Image 1 (tube, rainbow, N blue to C red):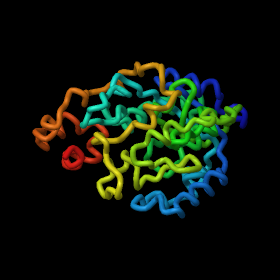
Image 2 (cartoon, rainbow, N blue to C red):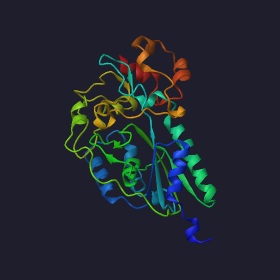
Image 3 (cartoon, one colour):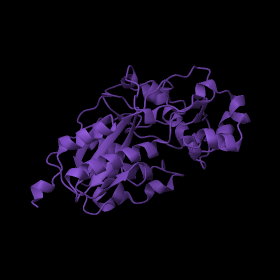
Amino acid sequence: MSKIALMLIKEQIHAAAREVGFSLCGVAKCRSLDVSRTRFEGWLASGCGDGLDYLSHNIDKRFDPAQLVEGAKTVIICALNYRNAITNGYSAEARCKVASYACTTDYHRTIRAMLREVFARLRHSNPTLTGRAFVDSAPLAEKTWAVEAGLGWIGRQSLLITREYGSTVLLGALVVCDEADSYDSPYEGDGCGECRRCVEACPNRAIGSERMIDPRRCISRLTIERKAVMPDNCGLHGWVFGCEECQNICPYNHSKPIATLPAIAPTFDPRTMTEVDWQAMSDDEFATRLGHTPLSRSGRERIIEAIE
């Protein structure tokens, strides 16, 4: 079989991702992202990775997929819109807020299953295709690769922003060992311009310069990571799991479509739950009602601590 016959067809990749239910897909050529690596190492050196020791491991693999998957040639980045009625749906008085992505079945399971289906469809045309699927399961710089694959840019709040869905997207990647017939162009430009609304909206002033977050002050980290310690002059501001303050204020997140894929639909609505409801929930009830969601990462006790 000739080398050309083994090549992936970019349009077939896009079609497979679309048919499975992904909102966006981009195809990038494997290479070492040296500039992004240097910025990341500088961020770690500043102390922002304190308490997140895993970030300093396997940096080579994070920015060079060939170090992660032997023989890697192509990175396929897929994005899934998760916007729902809970996104930007809390009142100013709400005190039990949960990030809207966490109100669904754990997206890791959902996206991993979708990526495997995309991979199976590609193997139908390329039976010898090899590769791996990743959803936060390995040191892969998914947001950086999304820019490389043309999906959007990194906003001031360090999140990927897409023209079509704003920043309310979840990412997954396929790193495969065949080349594509063509690749998507990296996203060029900066849609943020002079806007600093997210910087000003962050209650804990966790958004720093160079589009980087100080996770030591970030509400998402403080509510999710079990070992996180609350710094002075910081608070949770009504959030008990995650935070969407910087996203709610972003102009690119206004008037965007609600997700329609059933697998990403909310399975509970925290807006209907009071402090008493959360505090009265037993461990068994928590496991039954919410064990399939990302809230299982922090656990019931940490959520109760956030409420109190």
